[in-house]
Length: 212
Image (cartoon, rainbow, N blue to C red):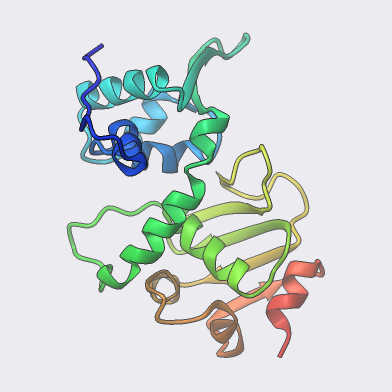
């Protein structure tokens, strides 16, 4: 494990950047907000990162108390990485960075990779901005399906694939609409009113989104 680099500044922002300022670290946190992940799964959902850099970042994050590594019981018997409580505290940091970076998204470039669950954070921001409260939301995009927990507490913030139980709302939207919501160019409820987001379900979240 490489020695920890430091800005050597008595400043809380500098101390935070000592731990999470390296390239890829916060994107690894983004992936682990979906729950425990195997190394191979992380590598697949972080296109562009080398195996050496990913392994190094994971070791650094474990050293700094952001993640833990554990072995799954049989028949899985694979090692997975997951966030500690300290690591989960980075969720609002990622949300703030995502909001700050939204105007820079622009149109998707031909070279841009994308995964459906990367839209989790902007959709969380949109749902909370509409006062959706707490609940489980299933989202279907052109790129695939994922689900989001509002008010997740200590559990995962999102997961790939269909919701594991009956969701409070199901949302279906196309790529163009999801990108507009992600950039902040279109409000979620405005998109629902315009017929660009289909909302089904009878839970509280669905009812809030259909209001007005």
